[in-house]
Image (cartoon, rainbow, N blue to C red; front, side, top):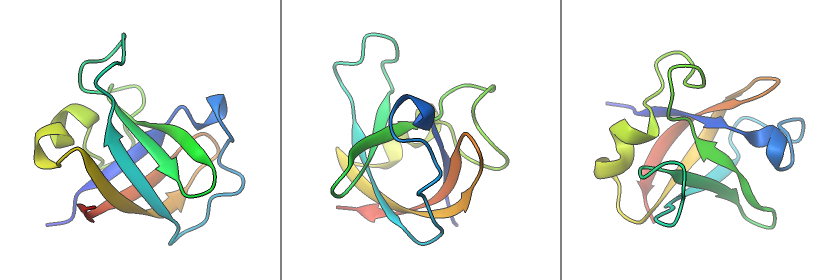
Length: 98
């Protein structure tokens, strides 16, 4: 079963204009996040953080899982691949733990 997730908050970092299908992203649990105890930051090699895994009904797109739904399914670090790029978000598929 494929698990999809949405990268939210990209506009606070580098935007989504450069993102393309097939690019690899890395997920890391963000234990020190003051606003969300299930926060998962999303990074890309050479850029650093590009957003967070969406964790609200307002930011989760389509069949994506929220950060809360995948938090216990991954270890501290996991990877994914961008599937679709939208103006303010990207939908990705979870690959494996790193």
